[in-house]
Amino acid sequence: MATMTVPIHPATLRWAREQMGLDLQQAADKIKRSVEQISAWESGTQEVKLSDARKLADKYKVSLPVLYLQNIPEEWQQEPPKDFRRPDARQPYSYQLCYAIRDARDRQSWMREYLQNENEKPLDWLGSFSDQKNIQHIADWVVQWLGIDRQEIEDLMDDKEALSYWIEKIEAKCVVVSSNGTHAARKIDRAEYSGLVLYDNYAPLILLNPADSPARRIFTLVHELAHLLLDDNSGISKIDFRQEVAGYDPVETTCNRIASNVLINDDYLQSQWNDNDNPETTIQALVSDLKISHSAIAVRLKVLGFINQATLDSLLVEYRRLYLEGLKNRPSGGRTVPDKQVLDRCGKLLTLTVLTAYEQGSVNATEIYDVLRIKLKYLGDLSSRLQFPLHRWVS
Image (cartoon, rainbow, N blue to C red; front, top):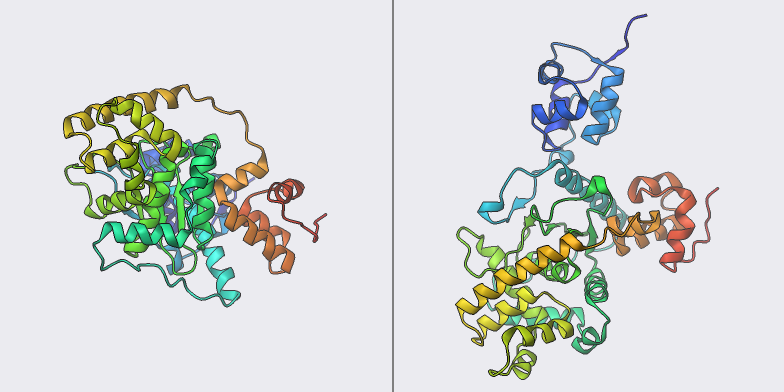
């Protein structure tokens, strides 16, 4: 019996590999075929068996019919987000990060289309400060615009609650906030990226790396929001608290400073500072109140002149050591339930929008799975977690 082959287009196959950040050797390792075999398929000198085509589609994260296309739709041919990471951290985006970006863009595309169909207007605040240089003015505007209550933050139990607080405030401005998820296949090393922003006039999206601590994710979140206020670039960040880093993008430095001024009230910082105190003791007390990282507070103290550069350098080294030690000892947390996985991956704003669309009859059960990746049997758990009354049930 003849082996069944399929009409895979060579150029499309090469595109599918490259958009996942794989070179020929990496693709061969994933498909369990030789580099020569992958090259033969991509050059068109050898036809692809159906069984191999299915493996290729699975590893390249596309549907099998996509590989039959002779021309890739223009909207799929998007440039990767700008690399705002430090020069010494700039490596080709990993397979996991490429998938996270593609996955996030798919969700963003759905959100944009839904909002446009609902006749929503483009967001008018994007790029509001592209021509302004006054960091404190921008920060003050952000605090007022988001409706931040610093006493509420101080009264929260911990940095996890504080992260939820900041996410809720930012999602209220129609920014989708999500993560690459905590599933083993989705994990991305914290050394690769802290967060990224995907610019869009209707549905800007911020993706956070859950490998970072909640306190650091708060800083990254506000940092990425600053990107949306400053320019229209999609980009990937690896936050560095050092003030002077050779080759560090000036936009990153500005976003760091905006985030610092938003998160830390200078008057409060000055009221809590005592020259006779041990800096580490004071910083620990401030961390407890502000729910952000030790490093972010130490940098702000240096900016205000309370500590010198040598003290800051010493503190940053120690805080980095303690942070990495804490991450290493952090419990894995076990398996995450499906409805919680959806919220990790998609965020509350997008998830509620999809459920609302389903209630309105704008999407069907199949599309819910396509966007949220949740099986219908768990939909009740998801609606209960969100306290969303789902009346239109599925069998």
